Length: 317
Image (tube, rainbow, N blue to C red):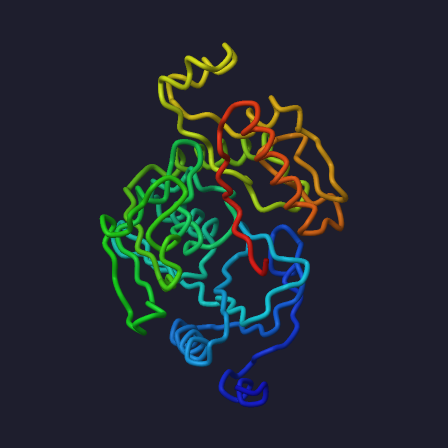
């Protein structure tokens, strides 16, 4: 399809839009085509058109867990601007583009408990659901009761109950099956005391400020924490004993043990504050971030025999 026909079919379509402006990393080249959609119907139409014309597409939410190539993306980026949410008894029904932190504040306003752990997490409810976001012993899978999604293969709108979402640490059915585009999420919460909810939210916000490098652009944690077996602890030095009870090894600890905390390549750095964060010191390139990712993976594998799993999604490579 020609550019003129594409623009006619998709009102508001733009060309060569810098994606660094749409990600928390502030890194990345331009999208060949870029479209902001304000309803799920507009999103569906854009996806259908892309599929029918063999045009690569990517649905963008808050861009908080994304590294975009310096060369950009040679396809259509569809950015979700439908962000409404509403309350029904103790449930919150949120459109895909709603910011997770806004929903946390909305739950506080309505004395609903269950999302306190998510305070301060950037990104959208769709992104949090897709990646099964977790923090401070909380996880979005515990809150999700239903997901509405568009199947880009069958062109059908489907609804998935919690048990059908295949939630596992840092992943879900929607992350594994890229044809499924989340349209809305229903969250089941509990009635609580507003002051206690607020106190817990503030506690988590303070911990984030203390432990995370919020002063620099980043995409959050670069790698998934490692779930270890009891047998593995027998092979590791005594420094690992403090993690035995929970059986989860923080990746920041492993990277730090490899002497990589604070490592800089170009304008990208393994954070001095939290070694599982790679930060943009100013004008970092995507390839500099990828070099640090590769370095961390190789050193941790060499020293501990652990294969790091990337949490950051990459686009355009």
